[in-house]
Length: 266
Image (cartoon, rainbow, N blue to C red; front, side, top):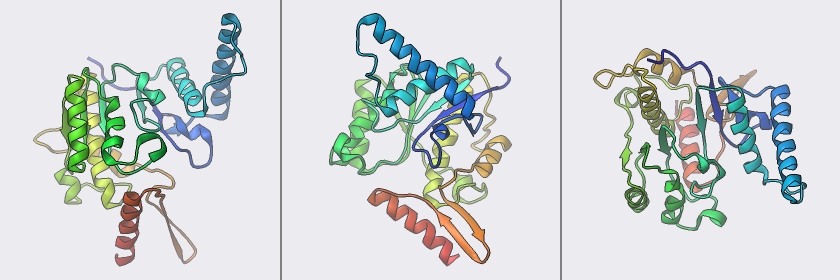
């Protein structure tokens, strides 16, 4: 039986200040030295391969795809025990979707976003997002618009899989469990994270410790201590309180506004 996870990798986007934030080890951005090392190892290997096959060595994968290769190379080289990959855009044709046998899959709340690539309707976007579903792994999602959920479930059926909807956990809903990212829209994200983590730990023969639906102390601690610069971030400079978050869709603007409004009413 596996007793612990020793090293965790997280690949996410976008970054706030430095590109190294996208490739994390144990909760910290890759160091400058390791980023440079693995970046140029991938770069040099691509050029060597191009020369060998008679291709133009100056042609490289586009920005996100190249960074995805660097992330894979980093986590293999660093021998991470668990790697968490967030897709870039969509899912079906995203470079992260080369992973064929993930332990678990999560689909967060959908909205109208990246329409130039994913389409102009929630149904078209749902089709792309559901592209990460695999028959070999359980898929969890939060409640979605009915038409989007119908597309997700249809795609799951085509892939020989099923989708399980995760509702806000009672301990999170009641605020018995406090979140480090304190916003109502984070309740669903946190509950989805609990489901994903529990499934992954179970598959690693590491009992997640959820008994009668009660979150174990290590889950409670993780939810309380999570910190993400620029996301539901609050800090004070002298007498001024700064509330920092980002939004670029109608849905996220509404959620961000509600978060700020709740603090103002507070």
